[in-house]
Length: 163
Image (cartoon, rainbow, N blue to C red; front, side, top):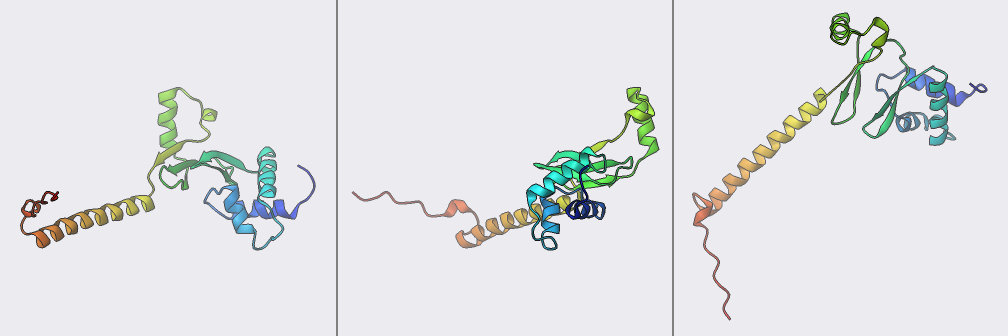
């Protein structure tokens, strides 16, 4: 890696102090107030240098953005298919043993396992929206019944236009 850089140090420290597996844009937004001359291009270049030096790793593109991790220990990830949140999953020897038995892999073959699903926050939001939608649907039907009698079929028929 090239010369000493305050920006690079700040970017690395930002990555080390979060478990959110951020994108370059997230890092840029966090650091910009303290480093007003920082550009998004500088963040991208430094992340690339840190990745190539083996100081950080990339998780690839998730929800349209490359995501980074400063934790190089052997651990797995759970990725939300709705919002793109990435959570660390500690290594589980039972799970890895089952996968090795199933696939015939050796200890060094399993570096990272990714699980994809819906995170608790998105599940909660989906439930609230579903309840609101159901409530609105029920309220709408009740409103029609109270406005037009027992059923919508008793609404007066449209009269043909007079010519």
